Each structure stands twice: as C-alpha cells, then as structure tokens.
Length: 135
Image (cartoon, rainbow, N blue to C red; front, side, top):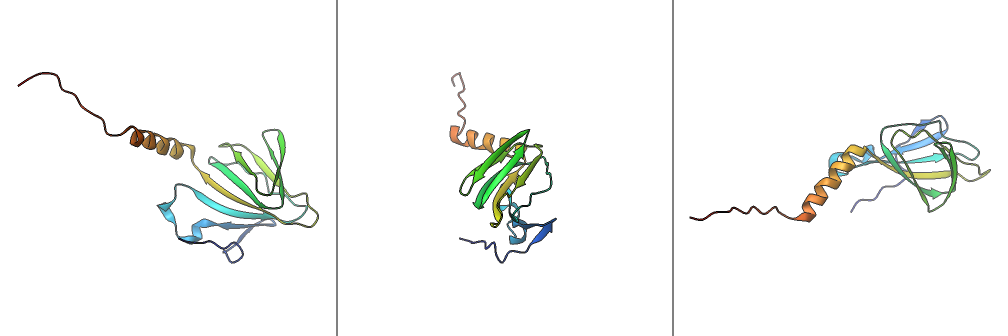
C-alpha cells in the first residue's frame, strides 16, 4: 500500500490555485488515469478550463460552485461532480474564510471505452470453437 500526502506534495501554481499533480509519485502506467489535488483560496475561482479528458472530482474540503455547460451547481464537502470531455468549466470558492480543496481523477474517453471492452470480453470467458464433421 502507498499513501499520498497533500500538505507535503510538490506544488505548482495556476494563478492563485495550488495544484499537486500525482505524476510526481512515479506511478506511470500503473494507473489507468491521472490525478491531482487543487486548492482554491477563499473568494477565488479557477481559470476557465477545457480539455479532452473526462474528469471526476471529489470535494475534500469546503464547498465548490461549478459552472459548466451553462449550468451552475453547488457541490458540498464529500460530494463529487463529473465533467464531460471538452466541457468548459470554472470552479468557484465562495467562502470568505475556508480553502476549497478538490481531488480530481481524469482520463481519455477512448481509454475508458477500450478498458470496458476488455473487461466485458474477460467476463464472457474464453470463446469456444465448435467444429462440425467427423473423422
């Protein structure tokens, strides 16, 4: 088992947002997704973001206000939101005093489809070949 510690993770900053990407942990191809934590200071928001990956995000501290596809939704601590591939989005922290922290896992939709196909094939078991005829 491995553990990952947000407070001591190597950070980079995008505007005022602290980002801790999991690439630093050397997991490489051992996981079918990439991951990161990001923290939004009180009263701030992420820059508008849009990318080809699907993104599943879990609010681990604070409350997120997510604007995507012309919709705004409040996502409290412990809840999650899923962003479609290429869906432009902004994550806001409307708190006056609490940092918003989000864990996100993201992956390419094509990779997910290929993995689902492989799992379905594996679940079906080995193919049987029946040959008609006699000796």
